[in-house]
Image 1: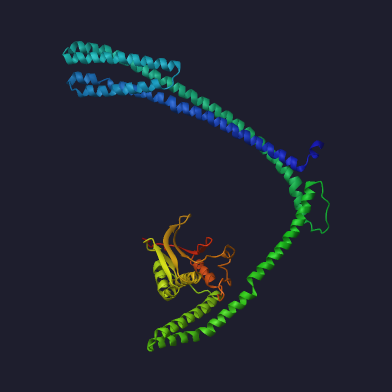
Image 2: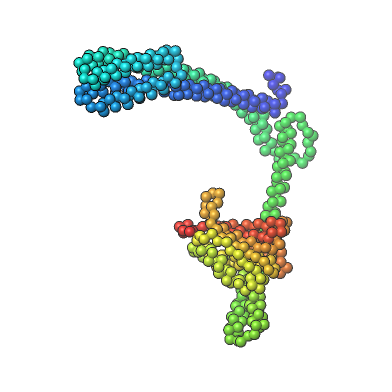
Length: 494
């Protein structure tokens, strides 16, 4: 066994695996060979011999059914018996032709031809009997009828003999298939035993020369000194694993620090605190200002320029209120008040709310609706906020004179779920590729005075409703925000 010790560990493992694979391939090849042979036997058994056996039995039945019709005709002279006789003669000839077309051995072929010739003699005699009956010579017809009956019994014996030949052939094929299956089973058992033995030797080799050294290695403390490249594979593996363990410890420590920085960012904490304080300190005075502006606008007679000034002031107050609300929602997400709503109706209300802004930017809204009722379980106010944020961003991206396309449809996902899909596309310059992955992150804005929270809060509202917010922006072709929400269960989206 000294020669075995001189073989490297990798080569010994490869040898054992190769032997197991060889045994597996041999088993597979034998199984394929046996299945092909077994299929041939089944094809022969089912496709030929069973068909021949069926033909023999059908001929025997057809012959038996022909026996009494001439007698019935002799007794009452009803021509329907001759019609029945003609039907069963056709049946007999049909099955006789079927038997002739099938592959036969010498004995079977001779038997089929003999049946055919005897049958022609038999029906010839029968036809002569019928002619005598029809001509009125009933006595002579009756005498001939008894002679023909002997031919019937001879023919019936031939059909039975042909049936027995086919039964013996089928039995022989069954025995052959059983013997082949027995031989194949014996071979597979032997091959499985060999495979198990080889597997045991391989398992022993792996345990003795791989698993045990690795276990000892795991118990060792990391060493700092560098080792020369060893000749033994296991020792080399131990050196590499120790280095890997040290690298893993450093990487894990760095990841924990990064997670801690991300989770407890001072910027997030300060902004959250600021959002709460600003919301509670500023929102009440802003509400009072809005009410006074609304009251003045209704009570005063204003010129067109003054009305426009009032509209600008109201718009700026709305923008301030939006900033405050964004900070508040970022620090403390609102609770959902879900109900079954038609999402198209929410979009209608959004466009009515933004009618002045759209006219000011000279932006045309083009809607594509499938005609179906798009019901979802959602908070209508929060969904209105989602569409307001997306449409306002689209207006600001377009600048002046452009279009916003809103496509509303009902879709089926790859998993079979029904969803409502709202695609809002603008004709603006689009979003550069390097900024697309950041556009939905907090505090990232492409606008000089933006807070970077609008789209982040929009995406969070959609996700809280179990949906998805996706962005598509081909180069120079505008941007598309796609809102996908689960369709309401039990509603008829028709």
